[in-house]
Image 1 (cartoon, rainbow, N blue to C red):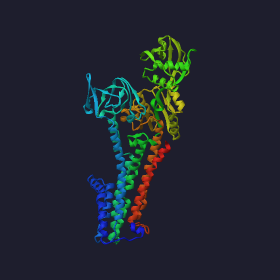
Image 2: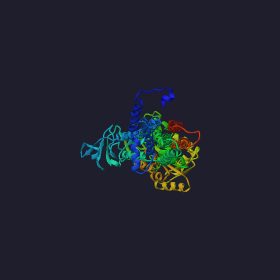
Image 3: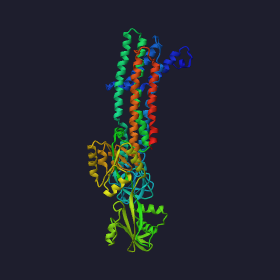
Image 4: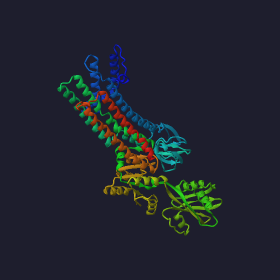
Length: 618
């Protein structure tokens, strides 16, 4: 065939037998996966793509072998090699995707150390992870990996959980706070009571989640499988029907077999078999690189139907950390800088989010913080200590009541958290804090609304805070003071109004709502609950990713449909030509193989355009 294209004729004694030998290698070695697949499908009594491919390449091979050994006709070794190579490329692409996912699982599994420091009385000894039991106390030194899920019972430290939760900054953890197996300990020494071992650990749940997703097939993929199965049946019926029809019409066996092979080659559903899996593999890979972990492919495709998306507030639309909003002096002896200095100093030994917010603000203002002595913490009331020889106290309205200090409320009451500072029994001012709205939230809401998706807020916070956030972001609706067990009811109410609902939350308090929603999206560092209830997990805590996810879900589904239409449409046009029954329009097996290859290439190129689509959304 190639010689014919080049206009040359290179033959030598025995060249046909060399061609036979090489083609036999291609058939038996290259075609082995399909021949093995044929046997497997026949055992299951479910003829599919492997059956058709095996029949097509077998017909081409054995007919060509007959020609080599004296039967009148021409060989189909070119078509044989083309068909096998194209299908092997498809399998290679699929296996490459699966191998990539397997490597990702290996990387996750490698996060867990092999040994742990088990505390045994006053001693510690090295034990294997498999020997740990729930309730054991383990010692984790600076720089070591946490060997198991648990709760800190002694010490405090910053832990790097980025490989597990996507949280880029080390997270400060102290007594009674949970740690995740696989996280890397910072500079502190902590003792942890083992809570989760084996399959119960967060890391194991994530690995199981990815494995389950790999095995899943979306509705579109199942549709493609059904279409491929019917196309196989049609191809077999048409192929053998064409063969016997031409024989009945008086044509030679060579001509009839040529038409049959052409039909089989053209009708081979390789493009159909690759149309959806190729898009799924590419979209899953691109999604993972952009921080979108798809657990449920059906839900991912269903994201195109979302009409209402419900957001949790804290940690989703907002940063989940309290930032300083206002610094208001109430004494002429202290300006804003002095007020911030004393407030930060007396709060500095605390690990409370108020203390962290003050420290961030002081660092931003380049203020040198004086040391504090005699520090005391009164849970739910405030803190006290000595700063620069002065007695300093800080706290909210409860502290003010205890000290019999009268302070007036202002218009921002309820929206901001207010902390007063008292120096030597004088109220010198207050600092207010608010859970700051993420910058990316504004753009995300606009993109969603532009795509005719209603956006609602669902929060346990008070009415003022909810309304303030909803007004600033321009949300369509908000629901405030909703307890975690009531969030599911709110989702049910929306679904009763024929809304296709997506719920987005941190995967902790929102578990029932995430499970109830048509599409559950866990954002950020939600741990085991996210792994159990959400359909999609966003590695980064960025609301913009949610808009990208939905738009990318629409694009992915669109590409799948386009590939399905092309893969089936091409057969509708090419099949009649392959049979030879259309006067003046009869195509050769070689041309049929070329059409088959072009069909696959078009599907592959169309799937690759997904990469540019997500980049344009980002």
